[in-house]
Length: 385
Ligand SMILES: *Cc1c(COP(=O)(O)O)cnc(C)c1O
Image 1 (cartoon, protein in one colour):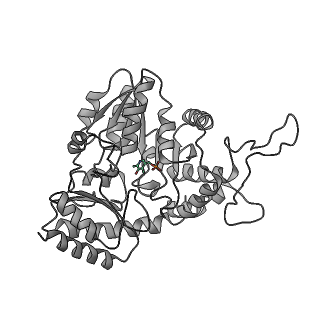
Image 2 (image 1 turned 30 degrees about the horizontal axis):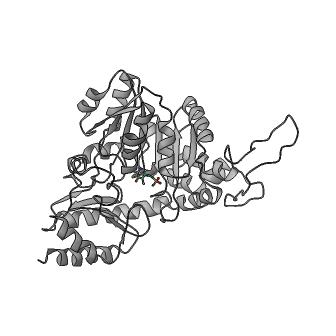
Image 3 (image 1 turned 90 degrees about the horizontal axis):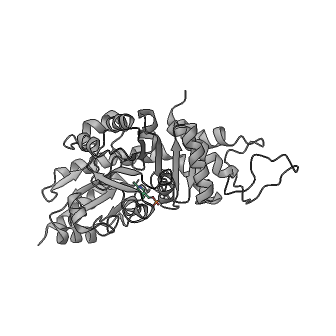
């Protein structure tokens, strides 16, 4: 049994594409259609929406990495999320974590109700509240852990038990951890979803989504939806993602190591009111996270006193890109209230701790002393009246 670091390097070519000519990289099959040998005998591939050898290699690699039955590559993370919701039908009900990704929130609140699919948002750090929200028509419990942007932790095993008692499926958005550090299918989750735009691609170059299913029945249904819905990942982006995923462990582990240093630095700083990072023992989900994951990750959030201080801080930071998104080799500083969670009503934002002083930081691969010095000088400027 090989370790995941090794599978990240060799998975696509070994599991997905045995090249008879010996290429060490999966070739790009820029072909929309495939020649068939005879009128009644078709080959493995016929049309690239239904399957393409480059995309297939990526799909087999992610299935292997998550320990699932089958993998699927989509054009974006939201295409992956939306395709999975298509497992549901009119009349079905979803129990979903209240601090879910902003795009998922928008889909669940603005699109699914038009198809007769209802939802209840719940604080998933409270398992009793999750159990209480389940109705006879609940078909899905939707988890995101650690969550965005306040890094809330859901007890995955606990939610799976509730779902098993009620006959509902569980989906888990694993974007913040990658399979390297969290394998939800091993804990009984049914479907794992990734925005591969983030840590798996890791270079802020492509948008992509991945899905892995636990059972052959779910695989057949998701395959049927993927082929019907049609939002597959293109060949060149599939190639880029295969290449970028090879370095996931060195990137993620170094970024997480420095994230811990920055979290400790911020926690000790007088201007910072609160730090959200599951690696800190002061984080309420610290123990649960450690029991289901092997890294606290490379994203942290922190509270400055108000909008004015946050604005001064953002303007003074020199190294990070000030942008939406996360998981790149460059550090990314973002302001959730006006960026990732702008689609959410102010009252809903406040309930989730997304205040006007909240900032999120995704740690990149810059030198750790340079990053800490940048924080120090920016916080000093932000503290000035
Ligand atoms: C970015 C993100 C998504 C959406 O992915 P896209 O690739 O932007 O469509 C979903 N979930 C989480 C946790 C994300 O960070």
